[in-house]
Length: 242
Image (cartoon, rainbow, N blue to C red; front, top):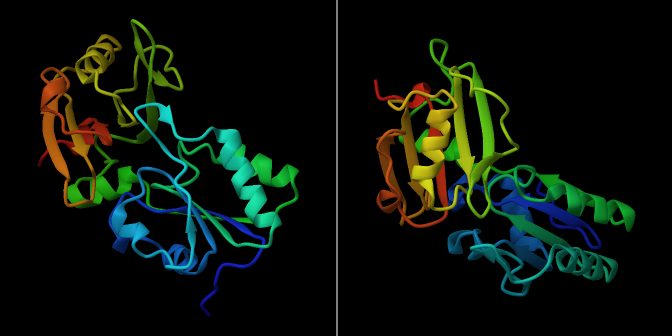
């Protein structure tokens, strides 16, 4: 049974990595029937083209760290429209529960007693691995899968959450939002104990017509060789070509 978006409900929906064919059926139905759509900037035009022509679309994302709206402002929009009896889709690129501030939005909705639903999406790491036909884990080389973001300070770049001690050799590391200092990040990972010959793949604009793939190693990755943001960085022996 097809379920349309319901009045007064907020849906935190994963839009996937960009390719509209990777949406779940549930996400598609909600995007097509919601009264209000609040999309991140990274939600692709292909996905946004599926929105009802009668829906109100209010972009609420940010690029290069420059917000169009504060997180509190996003909360206010969700509460305002849901309280007025409108169905609201908070449309997040990728998977809403991974690096998407979903916890803050869930807390705001819960505090205001606004009913909500979470609809998972395909996170970029899985879509990239599938497109490249490479596993993220392997019985012989990678028993761990680690998702992280890169935190940029004035003179240092760290993974978030911060990794203490040597980085595990039997892991595949996926870095979301790595910024542009790939060489610095690689040097710090090598200093933590990862071999410089470890393969890494930088994918720009994953699953879209503008996708660019760079296959290299930690020892030689170069900032200028990586395509434009958004970029996903995969590191580990499991992604080594056969």
